[in-house]
Every structure is written in C-alpha cells, then in structure tokens.
Amino acid sequence: MRVVTEREVAPCFAEVDGVRIAYCEAGAGGEPLILVHGLCSMSYTWQGVFAAFAARGRTIALDLKGFGASDKPAGDYRLDAQAEIVAGLMARLGVRQATVVGSSMGGAVALRLAARWGERVTRLVLVDPAVYRAHLRSQLARWVLAPSGAVGRLLAFRAFNLFARSPLVIENRMRFVYGRREAITPERIAAYHAAVNDAGCQRAIIATLQAWDLGAVERDLRLVRQPALIVWGARDRFISPHFGHRLARDLPQAELRLLPCGHVPQEEMPAEFAGLVLDFLARRAS
Image (cartoon, rainbow, N blue to C red; front, side, top):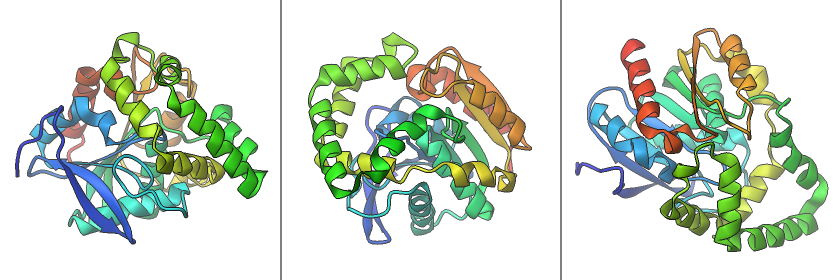
C-alpha cells in the first residue's frame, strides 16, 4: 500500500448499506485505528495527525454519510445511523476490532459504537465529544428545527446556503470554534468552505440537527467499559471542558488530558494531540 502523508490522503470508497462511503487508509500491522470526524467536518480534520498514526499501524479515516466525499442521500442521520455506517465499514474492510477516535459529534458516534458493538471496540479516544443533554448549545438547533417539517427544512436549507456561501462567515465561525488563531489558515478556511458550500452536505447537516438526540449516548455510558482517553481543549467555547471532567468520572476506565486550545485539538495542536494518543495506545495495549 502506498504511504500516505498528512498532505496527501488517498481516497478509497466502499459501499455500506447502499451508501458509498469515502475513507482514507494507510499503515499496516497492529490493531487498526478508526478516525471519526464531527459535524460540519470530514476526514480532512485528521490530516495533521494521520501520518503519525499510520506510522504506528493501520489507520482509517472515513467521511460519515452526508459529509466529505461520501454519498449524501436523504434519510436517517441519527447518531445511531452513523454508528451503523462505521460498523458496516469496519466489516467491509475486514476490521474485527479497532480503537475508535471520535471528535465532537464523532465522539458521540464512537460512544454509540462502543455501547452497541462493544466487542468491536477495544479502546476509545474521545476528542471534545458531544455527550450530555445538559450541553445547551448542542440542543438549541434541534429545538429550533425539529418541529419545523418540510417547510422549515426548506427555509433552514436556504438560510444555511446563504451562510455557507461566504468564506468570511466560515472564518468567523472558525474563530469561535478554534482556541488557537494560528490554526485558522487560508487552506483550512478554503477546505471547510468548499465542504459546507455543497448542497448535499447542507441537507445532511440540517437532517442531523433535526434528528439530534444525546439521550441514548448519555444513558448508555454505563455500557461503555473500554479504556478511554478523553482529550479536551481547555479553551473550548463550544463544549465546555466541564463536560470532560464529568465524562472522566462517568466512564470507569477513563483518563482526561487538557490541551491549551479550542474544540479541535487534532487541528490546533496536532503534534501534542498525536503524542497523547500514541502514548495512550502504548500504555493501554490490548
């Protein structure tokens, strides 16, 4: 297999439940590492750490249904549905067990995967994950959109489309999400602007928000017994580090590490983030 650098992640595709899922794979040997991105994101979020992980062993970063280069059909965008996509891709790629790394919404997906297919997940790395219903910001969009029906979806789509057209709006949003301004590069702005400016992605985001429900994630934490590394940005203004401390108490084999950054440590402090993950994997070898 061709070695993939952090700047050159070769896309592959696999059909999972009738949906073409894009993924990037590199490395060989060892237990596989599955990387799951968050909402309004894609596998691009891992570009700064992908090479370090691939040097350790087999590493797979996927685009969830509706995001990145994956298909963007209408249909089910619940967190459980995305967890089923991850489980299906693992099966298609012959991955019997893996460590799953999930960022933000991807952390919620990883927790659903661990709760429902516990035998498939040996360890978890949860990066500023969405977990608790008390996280008001994560619920607000659903409260606004859930009762809106088809007309509301159309209005939401048109509003989001206007929002996504401007790179300046994307940059301003990134300034809220990122705690380290130097991570907001022209390349990164352009990449996320292109992603969310796609009409299919916009519909997937709206469908995800309308189906948003952290109830099962929070309730089933009791089923998650795997060793877990929780990495949280100490400057995260989107999901407070308070929830990281709470999650570390609620999971029986969890350790919390804070980094001086915002909501996306893998982009803001890639070397430090990769170091924490690789150290955890070495210490918690299955």
